[in-house]
Length: 333
Image (cartoon, rainbow, N blue to C red; front, side, top):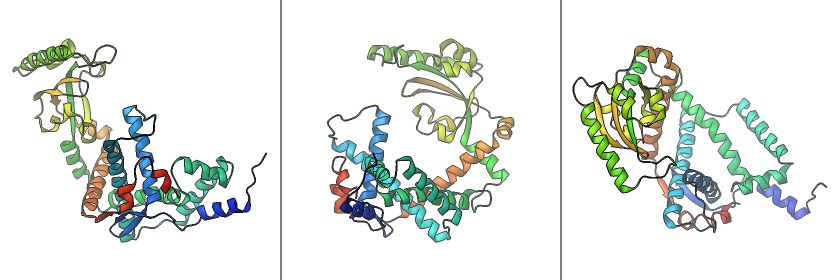
């Protein structure tokens, strides 16, 4: 049976779909206002991401101050990014085309139809801590981000790479590596005891001394001592980009090593590592030029974004200070 709405409910739907925001200001970025409803969506989004990353959830709905602040900081950073992108699009005169507007409308219409009409669509948004206007802005932001990206670092962009510049980027940001891992996890994936971990470290240090002996056959040592099956299956070495290296403590110093230099012992999340940097081949560049170009474009665009965000004037309101992971739903309106 089709659900029917009384007149007050219909009026409420019309209000929810109007452009007027009943939500108080939470953040300003270079004078651009962001309301609490938008912040609430980002907070719920990041709360779910955090639970997925850590594999834990708060059954009672209560969150400690550290978790709340982490989620709010991630949300603030994403909001500042989005506002800076919009600001730069205005500065460069980048606007949505008729085709963009049509695509956004068609996508929204399809989502409404998928949920059985406006009421079901709004219920879906509410469950995601999102209002209709926040949905529209979030979807449009995707288009603006792509426009700014292509304008600045695309084929004809101001910061487009020449072939010579791209080859230099490849030389500076890529490395081929062999490594020997001494795991800190047992066969069930559980951490070793302190004494077992100490024994692994002592063994890794012993093998490092062998690996740094002039004329040492590192590949042979890898075959004898490495316990990482991925490395064993690629014993001639794997090529890693800066973005793959970044954040992996066992590879933090890889790009500072000379070709054929052995470094270690480095501690990773899953074990102790001895690494050897190998020379890159021209063939790898030729065979992977498109992926290298994408890496270079991403790096340049992120560098520009980071600079703009650092220069941005950001203010948070009393509403921002009050919001947490329990009361954010009060602001979804």
